[in-house]
Image (cartoon, rainbow, N blue to C red; front, side, top):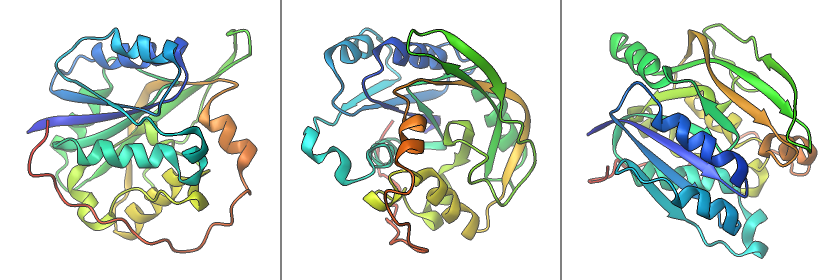
Length: 244
């Protein structure tokens, strides 16, 4: 079984997705598989993704029709495909506007290896705002650095690594349109309800580039579009019988 499955969700960021992929390839820990879930991106983005050749990379193309795009939470849907298409001890996430530092996999996996009673960990994330001309406006940290049962709003899913085994209790990520702006918060909600704490690993392990086209920016624009219910139907998880 592979040690780490890293799930990358991609959509129309050809100038950045290559940096995200390369940051995974540059990890100083080698026992991983990278599942790239591309949501029917433009040709430029597809060409960048296809330019990478490594046996540890799995590429999935959704081919979703444009009129279907906003009927469900796309990135959560793609994450679930990645979860069900891989088999690993640990799962982590990256988006097409995030760059990992090279010691992220080794540090997080060592933390979980050394602490069998802990199931979820995260580190600090640098957030760099980019203007429409591709220039950096500022780089700042999220400065949330504590063990917590209240991660939502403070921790980005690209900062997290967790044991695959927790999915038996949490289920998969919710994908309904009502969670379009906050599927990660709802998944974290299920993690907490299952009794799993988020443990802080000191240090900064990735940078997120907040682009004019970033999901984070789009989420902020669309927040409030859907009324979020207190409870959602959970999607069951069954450990795959095979996979990478």
